[in-house]
Length: 444
Image (cartoon, rainbow, N blue to C red; front, side, top):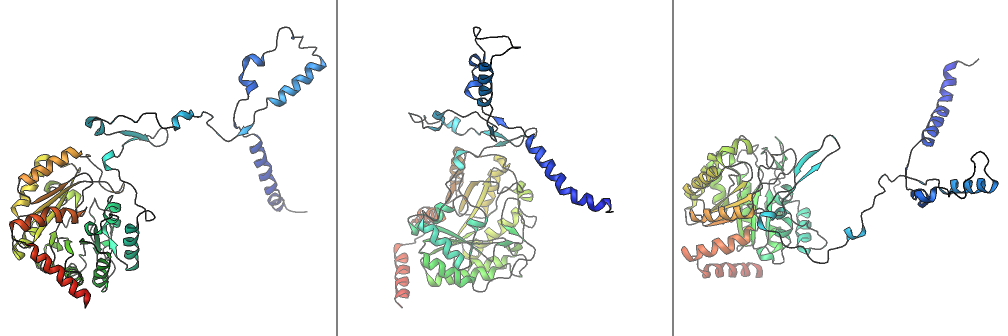
């Protein structure tokens, strides 16, 4: 006689099949009411045709069976049978009237999440929305991206999720386009609370061919202005200063007329490394203070301080002279800074003779980063731009989508070089000589 255990194992699949069939047969479906059941008048029998329910006629029984079969609801998985009117999907006959500035700048909120756990979020303001770039419709954008992948180069535009990547890379005029190359890899040794670049205590070693690849790519693109930036490499003895300087020298050898801006870190306060980069032949030395002094410990990595950044910017002027190089910095707004703190930061920047300052809206990369305390309106950015110029800055770019490298070539060429050319004797002959030297190098 077989033991009960094997019999139970043999019967288990059959029990599961029967249980599944019973569950399916008892499932309730949402139904779409038929026309006969939706009309209460039609479903009521006429008084002239009513008979005793105890003795129905054969004809009435046949009619009743037919009606029951026709009125049987059709099962469906659709849970919401209500459909919006077709007019909701059509454009209005007349375009909507433009909003007033007060209405346009009003922040809108929305409730998201499941029932019982809904939370209120702030919608992104209209002035911060940009179109998504497409390589299929923009050949310049597609070419730059393909060259970057082919030469194993990185850009801060991609790593930091910049909203202006389509405009900077995809401009029709390549001479005024801007590319921001990120040197020394895509992994940083610091962890600032506003930045989405990957972090690690031990990043990959430097690529010895990167300076040559970078110079080759930039000469091939035909750009008029380039920004070189890098991750912080505190794991290196020199912080990557020699690698940075070598890249700039290679670029100037291949294309002397290309304007180069170097956006560097603070090299852990080592001013000798700052000097190496400043003397490499660049046109603009940039280092971002990022925010006001009071918020620096909460926004930036603990190894970066506001005073250390001021020392870097001031030392560049001491090395090259006030007339021979342009220094630049950038500040994010919307992190909780006050008007007094921002004015004080601008005064400190002027004390070290910073020439160019940019203001942009801080935008939270992910939920793991600092939240946005305030969305600054375009009118407020314009106010800060005027204040910066009144304080003596040579040029200021301010706007919600302005970044340290956003359209840097256009801003520099049109607002700084031309002004310096008139004030400090940079004549057009010097530019002509550089162009002639480039033509000679091409012919060789």
